[in-house]
Length: 172
Image 1: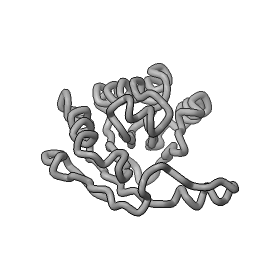
Image 2: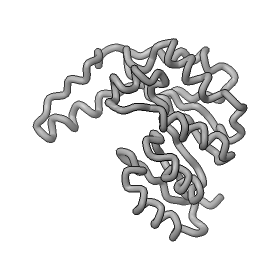
Image 3: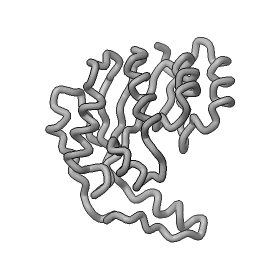
């Protein structure tokens, strides 16, 4: 691997999949990474995996009803894309954003661990547990909206690191 490269991030970079894939095809010899939630079709995800070297994959909430409640979207395709990533052998990092009272429950983190560890994923480099921060609040104010996320932004989420024992875990 060389010293530099390109990382596609966002928002969700797969929302611009056609553009992203066209750029990826032109980056021969350059290390290419994507930071994604996997919220895209299986075809788009497969096309991106074909041209990418490294993936940072965010897993938020595993239970589909809870995922829909907090994100407004179904997670069936996200989980399918994550399984495709694991099967691909590509090196990847799982990033788990901990939101107090939303994604930091033992139940969700046990489900996340089960999903990550099933089928002995060879490409797994590490798991990053990301503590919640209030950065989003200021972004709302900048566009004249009120930030009221529906959870206690002052609560300190519990990372339950012990659940991930046996995996290379980094708490950020």
